Amino acid sequence: MNKNSSNMMALAPNTSNKRETVCIFGTGDFGRALGHKMIQSGYPVVYGSRSTQISNLIPKDAEVLGHAEAAQKAAIIIIAIQRQHYNFLTPLAEVLRGKVLVDISNNLKLNQYPESNAEHLAQLLPGSKVVKAFNTVSAWALQSGTLDASRQVFVCGDDVEAKQMVMNIVRALGLTPLDKGSLLAAQEIENYPLQLFPMWRFPIFLSLGLTAFFFFYCVALDIIYTYIYENNNFSFFIAITIPNRVCPVMALILLALVYLPGIFAAIIQLYRGTKYRRFPDWLDKWMLCRKQLGLIALAFASLHAVFTLVSPLRAFVRWRTSKGIISQALNNKTEPLDHTNAWLSDSYLALGILGFFLFVLLGITSLPSVSNNVNWREFRFVQSKLGYLTLILCTAHTLVYGGKWFLSPSAYKWYLPNIYILSLIVPCAVLVVKFVLIFPCVDKPLTQIRQGWERNPKYSE
Ligand code: NAP
Image (tube, rainbow, N blue to C red; front, side, top):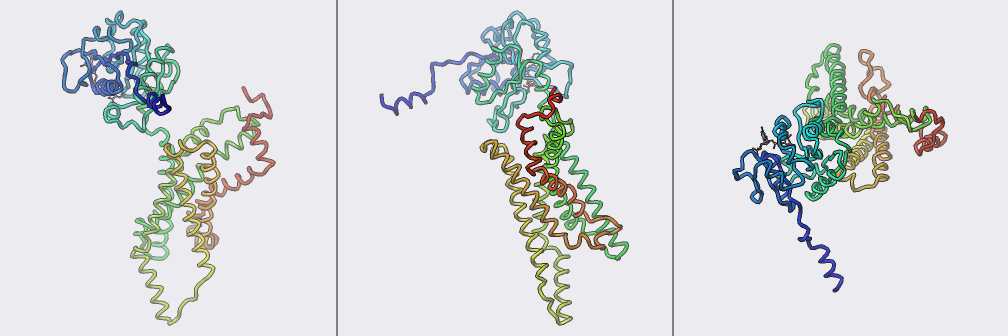
């Protein structure tokens, strides 16, 4: 036999490997979707239902029997029924003895019951082996085949063999099982589908709070102050001018806040002389939402870019430009080109463009489909080294833009600093401390600590 034909045999499906029958209790949305997927994957499916009448909705190759009769046909029974109906299973205890029961149920509220649904099922049927699985997959995704974003199936259970059998089914359906340990993990797994953007809550609230603060700060200094002291009505600044000030400020501060927890972590590790002691809770939580902070920062930076691009279309800008031209014409004098100004404006634009480009690159590499294709070292290089370079470029963009009037007394309306000055505090602090941290005398012990060395082993409880 030549090499090609042996390869073809290896690729041919193994038709002799017949799959075991799986029983599904409940012909509701999830039971039907899962049954459909199982039949597609080669599993004979038998439904246990209160009504043995076949409806059009039930997958056509499946059998529908009474619960006891259906359970006898399979070693694995998937309970696609709400928890509040589980009591009907108690009379079936003998038929279900020794069988693997897969609990897929979810609740309506976080920690709705004192014990998880899977533990409740195990208490009702102590002779059966209960495994928790599939609850984070939706019936719609199973049916429509749009499982790309949610291929992971969390599995937990006390019986290792039963868990393995369920994980084999998960794999056969083209999904990825993730072993979460014993049945004690069921409560946590049941809470997953009920969480609403848990990692986004802090970044969103922080961004909303800071945006509101900077927006009203600008309204006070740019509209109210000008109205009171210069008798100019610039209320239309609310539409573009002020958002175009708040967006870059927010982008810069949030980007700095992505790198600030890393600085705190380094200082704490240096102070403690070990990496084996847990960080304070607030720092742990902050570190976990850095990606979200970075993505919100990127959204603000993108808005700033769009607002800046539409600037020449604005009536106010066109009026100001034509006013300048007319005044030069009336005075019959052309103002000479201010080379310093030309350098400054070209420089801050170039820094802004480069900073924005790297910002977008950071955002793209944080997408799972991209980050899965780079190794850990490459990912760290982009997120850390290029991330700091982005912060340097964006900070320099702001400094060059406002540098010449930051120190002028007219920038301090009501003795308050301009928001650009405020926006530079956190990024500059991060960059200065980072600069100190890369000094060899600081970097060397820090690297050793991160490799497991301990200055004072008493801390590593
Ligand atoms: P469903 O459409 O309401 O179906 C539940 C099925 O349970 C019914 O079709 C019925 O099947 C059976 N049933 C209802 N009352 C019963 C009773 N008193 N005694 C015995 N059986 C009874 O619910 P579902 O959306 O399929 O959800 C089923 C389970 O899957 C739930 O625990 C849910 O949390 C979980 N889940 C659902 C999804 C989803 O996307 N839908 C996703 C993950 C997990 P028969 O008429 O055939 O007896």
